[in-house]
Every structure is written in C-alpha cells, then in structure tokens.
Image (cartoon, rainbow, N blue to C red; front, side):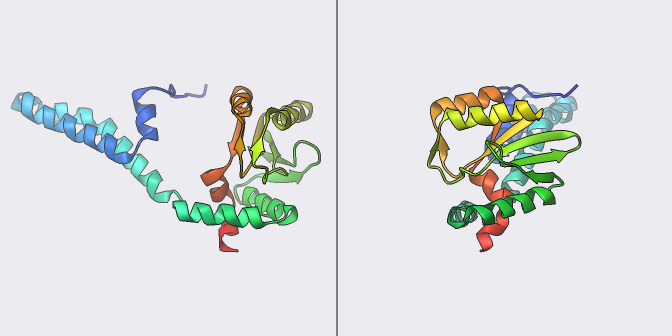
Length: 191
C-alpha cells in the first residue's frame, strides 16, 4: 500500500509554502507553550512544534537545492535554441543518468523509459510548441495503453491549454516543463 498525503491537508499545504511559514508556526507554538502552560508541562507543549520545525527544515532544504530563476531561464533558453536531435540526446542522457533504460520510439511517444519494471512513454518532439491542446495528449494516452505502459509524460517549453491541463490531470500525465525541465537537462544551460 502506498501512503499519500491528502492534497489540502495542513502539512501538504505547508510543504508547498515557503519554509518561514512553518518556522513561524513552530516558534508560535513554543511561545504559547512557554506562556500558558505550567512549568512542568512547557517542554512537553513545546514538542508539539516539532512537526512544523521539521517541515520548515525540509522546505528550506528543498529551496536551497532548487535551481535559481536565472539558471532555469538560461536552461530553457538553451533548450529552445536546440534542434530536435540535440535536445533528444540531452533528454536521453539525463534519463539514463537517473537510471532509466531509454528507448527512442516513433509516433505520439518519442521515448520509452523503463526502470524497476515500470514503463513510461514520453512525448517530447513538440517541446517548442507555444501551446499544447488536448489532441496530442490523447494520442499519447492511446500510445501508453497500446504499449502497456504504466505512466505517461509530456515535455514542453510552452504551456497547455486549460482543457489540455485538465485532461493531463485526469489521465495522470506528468507535465515536464519549467524548472522540472531545467533540472532534467541542466547541461543545456552550459551550452
């Protein structure tokens, strides 16, 4: 059984928020414990702040490891300037570094990634399209089903239309764009 946190739970929201919000909540809980609890219970009351302190540390750590806006912009500009063969090679290399067995394919899926018995089909050839509609994503889902893949991903420098975004969420298509794409192909920023 795979445990998944509810999307709108307090801790899930805090994990998506800046680190200092969790740190402020932790500090507030410690202050309340010190001000309002009897001396024998102050330490026990302060322990209630530990989950919030842990979330503050985790989100701060993630923020430090995240690429800067400037480096994301450089990586995306470099990817935008690449021709398909170079971009495909950069993606393939990045996925192989992550431990995937990468197979180039034709059709709606340009790559098939395999790792630990799970297969992902990836559509990437239209990465320069300014806007992606529903139809290419439908083709990718049909390819996923035909190949018996468990997952699908779509690589784009542009944006998805609202119906395409809703379809991707409904079909659980992972959208690789922005910072995710910059992290995937960091070598593109150095070219």
